[in-house]
Image (cartoon, rainbow, N blue to C red):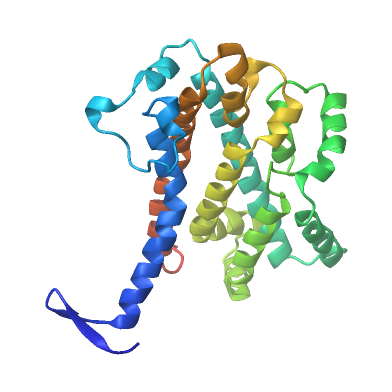
Length: 294
């Protein structure tokens, strides 16, 4: 495997070539569903569901753009669904990142009665899927009078309770692990300089945790954007639905056909992709910073 062969005038290890081939195969397996749904959104239904599947889009002259045109025409409340998802996902992301950072810092740097017991119970919560707690959560939201509104989905994250498809404890655990890696001497130095716990957290710890906060934000936003179950249970009005539920709901009242749904799926991927690209740049930029600016 350590033998080298000449490729384009350069000597490359055989093991590196094999690894590259394996990674390309894995990448294709991951990208293939997206290629297929994009190709299907530009073809007639009979061609879109034909076997073997057609992975690549048709030529420009054969593309059926009418399915995308129907989404932009306003006859289907697609962008209403997207706006609902954007609003709910943003609120959930801000809530979970905020609570995760504060609670994670407290668990990592402070000692208080019942700390280990509380953290252990929170870890147990990570193993409980939302389907187990949805009945109790629904009753609570019903008592608060927010059923059939976006608050039924976002309020738990604002209170630090849960995130659809992702236990709220995950953010706390993730941030705690980061803050544990920060030397305690840094807190002691800040205390000597007269900085209290809040100032230390805001001015020193948060800037250091940018990369971890960005990673957590991407994870939470992706999970909440793709969440189907919670919105399906909490919201009934079509105009208030999130995108995953809305895409399926447009089939019956609007008789769109599967191709319009394929086009809707393609467009629904774009916001998550944009968030990931922006967040990735921020992560790389944040990881280049070494030390703390005084």
